[in-house]
Image (cartoon, rainbow, N blue to C red; front, side, top):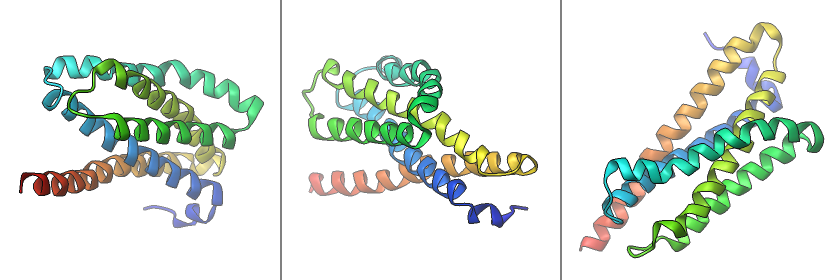
Length: 172
């Protein structure tokens, strides 16, 4: 069903790895960040959703800009900038998040994470599509979307294991 020869194409494979890693980190983190906002900062699920909206809004605002910038700066540089922005955002949240942190202190990281995703999503998809022939684009797109979804699933699952271990050790 899947033409495994697609993975012999370097750009296709690397782009799928980047997509997996992006989804792993960001969707795994977003899942737990909403839990953190609700359970630690003590807000309702609706408020937690509203407070993470800058993350998703940033993606929508930046994605068109990423397309324009790839023509000027190159697609690889834009993807690198996007992935670095996401890493910095996650590191910022990881280093600063405490039980007493005000929401406003997390807001820059949410925006930066969204900017990073906006710089990464479109360009990665473009590289995947450009790496294959027209006849293979449907299959390539399906593989890419599946790989990104699996990244999110594994991110939530593995981060769940990590957080479960941490919290079980804290309770002892």
